Image (cartoon, rainbow, N blue to C red; front, side, top):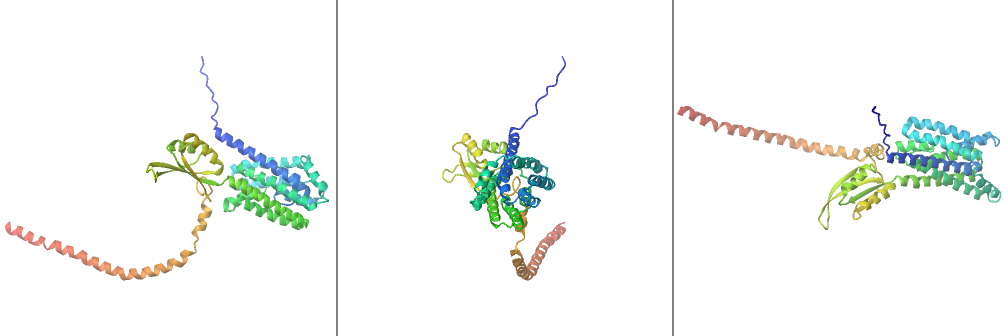
Length: 376
């Protein structure tokens, strides 16, 4: 019988596969929510609150009501910023942005041209003649809720909705400005441009409120979700817990020798830095292994280094300290005078001491040599 090769299926890491599936789901859901808020609330009421959809509203205003080009403008901006992210943020980031670059314009076109969700718009339009300001405020707030939540979900999925969100990642990469703050600044510039075009101060104020609400949601959902915790674990099964942190959670640990103040027992303490969203996973495992373990969680203000945010920007700012310029010259002058007075005295004393042992070493040797000669 012929030997047949057994073809085995390639090993699939379940954790990585689950991570990729979760990221794809978060990015797709975020794009759908953002497109829903833009098409149902912002576009019909011409609320300029930032992003590519605002430029679509402005350009469509000049094109006329009969020309529907909002989704075309959005698609052009999405593709353009995609290539910007490809050359600046790398292929890995662009892989997730590619999904958003395709999904967001498709969802926006679906909501904008095919009337999905237009029942909400029609209901608001019906009461607009009676309460125009209230309708604008409601549309702005609900549009910001959907848009801010959608952006935050795409950020949690290691991606972006594309468009101007790529600029927020660029600013966050090279500075210490968070994504929510930079997003609000970019939206503010877009709102000022809308003020020059529409000359509608009520609509512009609603747009400012919308941008502020969206930035708060991004700050709360994404930034709080990515905040870090410093965890100290004291357990008799520290090796098993440390192995789980290394293998399953993909984090490094530090082992510290500790002594109990009351019991005097020597214990090993594990210190690890995790993301806040990983707290439940770690707590559940520790509870299953050692229910009597002592665990403390401390919120970290900032974590910089390998595996977390880069340390270059902060380090560069600390080097430029103005205090060093005022104190160093004075200390050098004072020390230089003292050194000039003390150094010659030390040299003279050492020279004298160095000569004395030579004389003492030679004098006792000469009589010993003479006695040897005489006895010989």
